[in-house]
Image (cartoon, rainbow, N blue to C red):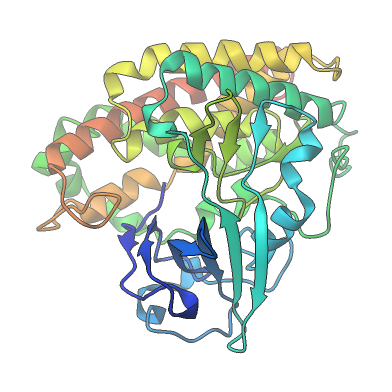
Length: 381
């Protein structure tokens, strides 16, 4: 999910072509726009990637914490998605049920930007997946990520080994850097009046001490994840980035964050992020969490990795730390007059949003408890 509402871009597609602007996160300095376009008699998607030096009409919408980076290991490196498509990064997993859009053309622009011209993928959007369909994707991801996972934790004091697949442009330390980039007003987080706000009191209120503990222990969780088996991760796995092809393959979109991360980290994001932006009702959350957990761990077990499957489960549960910043953000936004939906073309009922996000955060608090207990039994806490 994004900490800023996405909007349908107002700028026309490149090349003077007619097209439809697609929903994206305007806060990211890397994305200049996304359009569905007819070109040469073919339906394509054009995505404009923009470097830190790019100047355009959407500059005012890009806050410092979403700035594009020239550092190939930074989570928001601006050329990473181009390189991922050129490399067909999905093939590294060796999993036939996982796919990515075909790269049709690349245009290096005079203004420094790069246009990615991609296949317009037809199929079922991830937000419409059944629990069973989501679990099938999780199993395939487990098999692929297990195939590339490192053998386990390094000796104390040593850096974790590289996964069996790496590239110099893949992100590193995503969960140590992406969440920490979010602006959090600690005074609001500890302000009793904020916790007594009508939107907060009966939603986040019962979770207050557990959310505070998760935020306080974030460095410990990050260190735990760093010591787990590392693999190739997509790192933005949520329903908006999944499309189910009619032949059963799942296409992953938006490879901008892809990098080295802990086994289990991707599906640890998939489940809660399904409800944070009201894509899946929280009433489905228990069944979805159970099905995805079983499928992913089972997929890892089917892979040639051969390590302790509990480490995959631990990675999934410990990834709860990614959203330690979400409760403070909700406290800060409780007084908004309007609460825009993810598409930025409408608004949502704030009571519904806060209740659904609280359900997701409650799940993450439970996962954090499970991670502490499991890590303790494994001698890692």
